[in-house]
Amino acid sequence: MLNEIGEFKAYTEKPVYKCSSKRDLSFLGRFSFEMIMDFIGLNRVLTIIARGFMFRNGTPDIDYARRALCAWCSIPDKKTAAPKEEWQFRTDFRDLHDEFPEIVDSEGRGWLYRHIHSIERFITKNSDLVSKATLSKAEPLRKKFDSAWRDKVKQLQISLYSPDTKGAWIMRFDDILADALELGRLADKSFSFSDNEKAYIAEHLPVGLPYETAETVIAYCIANKPYDPDYVVLPIANFDAYFGNTNFSRKWLNMFPDSLLVRDRQCFGVCRVRLSDINLLH
Image (cartoon, rainbow, N blue to C red; front, side, top):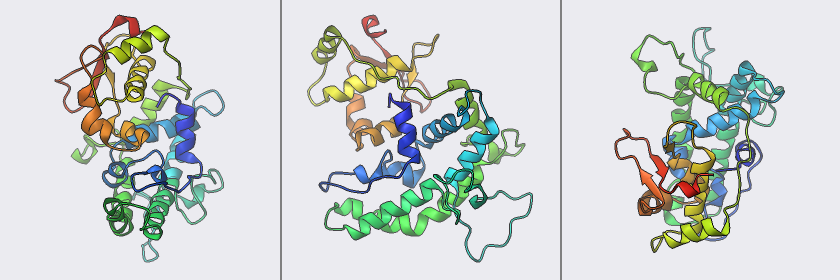
């Protein structure tokens, strides 16, 4: 979560599909089942991708970043699909293969599309290595993902200035590119706490909250704190994917004591937190 460059590579390079136990979900990469089945947490993923391509030559190239997003999100048209009219949203961006060969192939299969179906095939072929809960995800991914993702890719292309209500309260390329432009180049924000800071964190940990989790979240808050507001927005779904399970959102987050992290309880569905001790604000 702190190394944005490493995160970009996780979303654009070839994944490794393996697991060591039925609880091991590492074959999902930097995704969780909730992310790929409900499309939550994709805002951060797409923003990281946009930032990685937007600043390739130092100065921002918004059009290039938009084409990269289209390539990454590409899903091949059905063989029976009618040709798209000029006014219709496309979902098959195979024409971008020469420009972005690593994230879309010549048949229009974007990086995410290939990743999802590789996950589904891995689960099916290794049914003896995965849990029953994991095995149950294979069929929905195989049968339902394509249609749902095609609709989502169309939605992503709706203009920021759409006069219709269909353009309200959704995730769009326009918003992602605006965020990417504001956040700037990707960076490795990793750092180490001093021995005193580590002791302070450990002293305030409740039983059941792993130290590594607390340190990672606190470090993220420090590295991503805005200049003026005290609060930082936590990308909950992405933290779940980072830790490789849903313990963070369902268990660990609620265990943070106010002596470490204070949550904003009136933030309209967004998880905002602030550090409680000024000594931890570098």
